[in-house]
Image 1 (tube, rainbow, N blue to C red):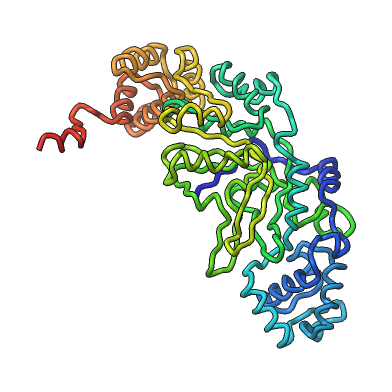
Image 2: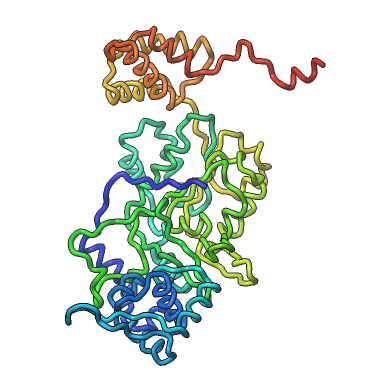
Length: 455
């Protein structure tokens, strides 16, 4: 599995942003406001004490992301059942009281651990999560032409492509991007997150009845820092700390994608449930790269999304007979270098949404990328070097002009120049060397099928 998180800035949460998210997910001060039962929270507390040893109310509050008043109420319930006891003070009078498990509590905690191995912040009930996801939907805004051009002002590409991507983002439908390898499909898809620069709340986990499904992923979700102070420790203000404030996620998966990665995964050894990719990507962008290279057929993969795209709901199974539906709120992008009609028939593709082809570059755009890369690498190239690359290399070898070529070829040419102890003055000989080492020679290649047919 592969995740990527992309961001152009290090966003910080100011007071205006704090007020907005606090209204969206206010901090619970009473147990009923958490949406969780007393018995459920008691099991979470018992597992934390079993895992870490005696804990104070403040420590439990931090670990479970719940207000101290809620923890204290549940501890009183646990004391009435003889599951916890107050540990005698070992320090001065300022030391906080610590709670430990009784023998009854230890048995109870072990039983809770056998039912669910989750030990962490209190989860958010599915109904709470669904409400927050819908309130911060990624489809709530319209992308305008000016915003599109501004977001990609530093990217060299055909304006026509931008003017096709913009409306596709407004549609709420899946986007199918195709074209030869190296035409910038994945690069541009990733940068679409620039258009969705607002913040989103991501829960540590969600609760479906008494089962907990982990959602927050450090590899995918980029947490936003606080502007000043830390309201997470305040009991009467700020947002519900069971949610993390993040940038909108950008999840990418490629040829490694399998069908089970799109379903709830359960680890029998740890007794943990983990959310599928699309649920983790909610309120963000979900890119399926290298479409057609997966270990799941394109038809099966397309069929997986028909209902979620139409109903904006994803139907999932916990594997123990429990089924539930969760919001499906992503910009879904399929990216491939295989022609769409090789993946599915035209009637089926009509249901997918926008089909946008990424083509080869004009000489003008190729030159602009070339000059940008030269400046970035600190390399000097006379105009005749670029003419040589285009006319004597690309045209002679019938290799189309692709956005990836300037960076790759110039990078190798600089490697050669540095290795040779020369300055970064790139010559035609450097470029010829880079070309010969970049492209695979086909002169002596024999197709394995031809070898078989010769016997």
